[in-house]
Image (cartoon, rainbow, N blue to C red; front, side, top):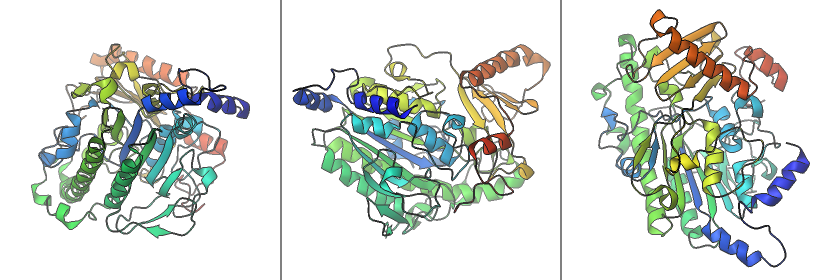
Length: 483
């Protein structure tokens, strides 16, 4: 989007579907702002969709009571996927509503340019107070450096570090102070308390607020949650998913015990967020989202971590509670929902204009029950493998789709994976290129081709995109942290 168009959009974004800001209408704008909902967007790092009590994980039954209660009041998007399931690409798509090959952040530690209009900028220009607390990971200037104000993409209240996976007494920067500070104790708990204070302070204001809280856990290291939570899970008692090979079982159980400890801690944190929203009287007109940037394989398919197209990596939890428009009774929606769809859907729920450069789809009417869920697909992709999915370990480019029932994926050599997730929920039977599904595969392939064409994705080798964006990468295709 050209700068002039950007300025014009931001000038009008505050108006949403309301009257133009002219002359003596300041008071009417204030009244309109009172009607705008607050947004509290909370997301963990590497939290797979299957890992909650409400989703049926046997290891977490009774151990995520706050999330279970929230699910009973929310729309639960059971086929929400991380479109490019790794940290930096997700965060850039979350803020811009664009796909990775549009904003250019298809590798970790790349910098988000300032050309795209972010959701925080739209909200800020609409009269919102904006705030971000926790992990950022889209600045691209080292993982522990101070991030200047002009690189904060529209957020004003600011307690952030680019990236760390040391969750106890971890560093951060506050506002425009370049001095490094430290969260006391387990950082997710300290961050949650800070957010709770922010919500209390802003609950009675005329201006709405938009708060994003980004926790580092349950991302590895898995064994660093507070002791009270680690005591809740013993490796010997962990029940594995049936797609974990026997030779991976011992390691998977040990890692999952620590992973679940992080989740139990974060469930208590989520309970604090819900409590402060409810007790300050803003529940009805607050959009509360709980989700994650991507999942974690944790031994499933014999794999670890993210970037993979399998459900444990690509599917994420997604609860959205907004009583004023979505009601207060829990309901499940199996519509495929990708990362770029988050921004336009939230803006529409707030009656705010959606920037022209946004590629995601506004599904607010579907969530509100006004229209039937479409027969849509959500893209899953890896434009260039790197980091924890190196080529020498099987990492490769792919493009795929998640429908309500099927997962279909192509690599550069052609069709690679096809799963019937209804009959085969653990994705243990790859049907690709089998005669009995030839017609189905052709249909799914056509839908994938159409999805790629829609976004101008020619599906090239990752090296071509690295060259196009001018990234300097090491031998593994990874941008060095401190570049």
